[in-house]
Length: 134
Length: 153
Ligand code: HEM
Image 1: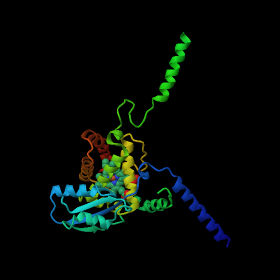
Image 2: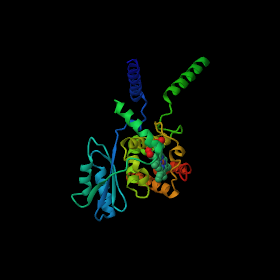
Image 3: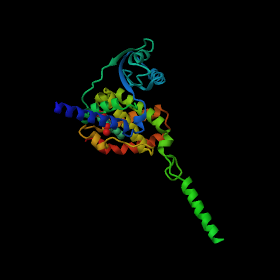
Image 4: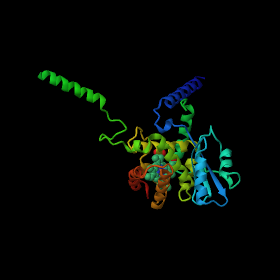
């Protein structure tokens, strides 16, 4: 019984420490900016360079979109956006340009890459959940 | 008369000390910093976002970044580090909290061709955001020497 009490008390202390750290740590200028999400799409159908630029400009001007790029071949589009304002399905609809191009969202692999960053990501995720300033 | 002059000189010196300060807007020689000339944090974050979408659409290097951008939190860390790095490197009021370029890229075995592709994606982002030629070249000049810490490590 005593062991359980000590264990729960330690857990509360650790959580309180993490909560304090999450909310008091100084945020960098970039960390104060609203967070973004990224979606990537495959496009099918012929696309001229002018159409590519026009599509990028149209997408970038949408409310909630911070950037959009279509590769030179017109086969891949990637979009950075604020999820509160626009979602993946709406982005796909806008990319298809009323059916001019067939659009399919690319599933991005979520593991791999730099192992160090992969390991620290869950910690960052947890801290940002505790941060009430977000 | 003489003490009055000394008093006047002291008061002037104090007034100058209070009114003259090194802001982010100048390098001490009156010329605005590259950060200010670029347009501050708004333009830097726009350029960084466009740079990131360029990289993710770029078949030459996008597999390198897939796991990072596929994870919401890793994406924020990379984006925030890039914005803070450019902001701090151009004289802005930011603190870069990430790893050194050598630490961040060691073990990745990035080739010179991949480095050039990434720099071309950045140059294209600067063009898309209509950054003037001088500021574009100044920023690329700051970043290009990092190649020695990034390529073949
Ligand atoms: C001047 C050129 C470059 C700059 C300024 C730069 C900057 C950065 C920064 C700031 C980070 C984050 C460090 C951290 O989280 O502590 C990073 C990570 C990374 N960089 Fe670079 N980089 C450059 C070139 C490249 C190139 C050419 C590649 C590959 C083609 C590359 C691939 C990566 C990858 C895969 C990561 C790890 C991302 C993660 O897993 O979170 N970088 N880079």
